[in-house]
Structure formats: C-alpha cells, structure tokens
Amino acid sequence: MSEVKIAAQTRTEFGKGAARRIRRDSKVPGVLYGHGSDPIHLTLPGHELLLALRTSNVLISLDIDGKSNELAIPKSVQRDAIKGYLEHVDLQLVKRGEKVTVEIPVHTEGELAPGGYLLEHVLNALPVEAEATHIPEAVSVSIEGLEAGASVLAKDITLPSGVSLAVEEDAVVLQVLSAQAEEATEGEAEGAAEA
Image (cartoon, rainbow, N blue to C red; front, side):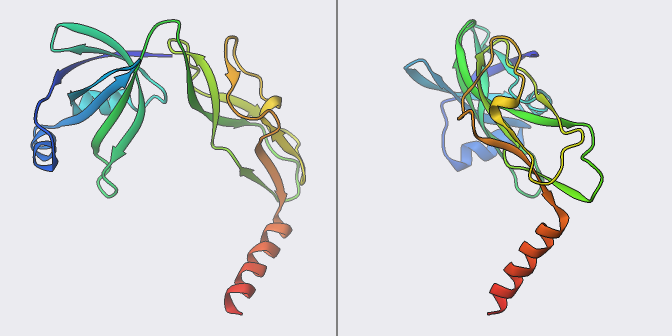
C-alpha cells in the first residue's frame, strides 16, 4: 500500500461560491473527519490529489498548514460527471495499527471453459477489514475452467495476512452464466416491456 504526502490548508469559507473559487485555483475542497473530533475543512492541491486517488484506498499523509501531520484514507470522492475533475473529497482520519473497513477491487485471472460463457461480477469490490497502513490494493481470483452455474463466494477468495472479510462469507462475488440464458433473459425483458 502506498502512502502519499500532500500539503493541505485549513479553510474558513464555505458554500458554492467559495468552492468554485477553490476549484478555479486548481485546488479541491475537502473535509477530514473521524475519531470523534470536529471535522476539519481543507483545501487540497488538485493535481497531487488526483494522482494519489489513482490508487484505490491510498493512505494520505496530510501536512495541515505545516503544523500537524495526519493520516487519512479517502471515503467519498465527488467528480464532475462530464469533465471528470475532482469537486470534493471526504477523508477519514486513521491511526497506524487501526483496523478500517474498505472495499478492494476484485481482479480475475485465467479463462472460462470453452462454450461462450459470460462472467458476471456481482461484487466489483470486496468489503474487507484491514489495518489502515496495510490495505491491499486488490485481490485476485482464478476463474480458470469455470463453467455455467459456477460461482465464487467471498469465503473462496484468499486474503492477505491480517485482512478479514467485512461481508457474509456466502456472498456471491462472481458467477458464470451461459450466453443462451443471458439472451433468453434479455428476450423475456423485451417481451415484458412490449406487453
């Protein structure tokens, strides 16, 4: 897990006008909260934050006004729907050694059995509990040779040491469908829509 250092300034202006002024300066308004403390409203450098957020569940070391250092993970990121730039970020305060609940991406390896099967990602990200400074970037699941009707449950995924599931063990993460069943389901939906 990577740790990124970002300099942040506290802000005292709030509302749409203040947020627009911050964004015009290529910065991003944000809020740091957690551990029962009052929320701290921040202004963060836009480009540095954008680069940091390319890594899922990145650990951010915030240098606030050059006075204090805090560790945080992103909890909510708002982006412009069309242009994709950052509009606002919520950061959760964390401490070294503390366990946090996050969602990590699920990556697949291998090929399905021949036969035109489709792989459905029921969960694109797996909810897990991990130490804040050791959050895995992703988990890999082998789908080699799986056929229609097969599914991968949360308990079937091998997690790194110190990481535990934050979802039911029997939750379906991936399932394999036959292409014909998928076409029939789409046809039934179209028929119901016409009726």
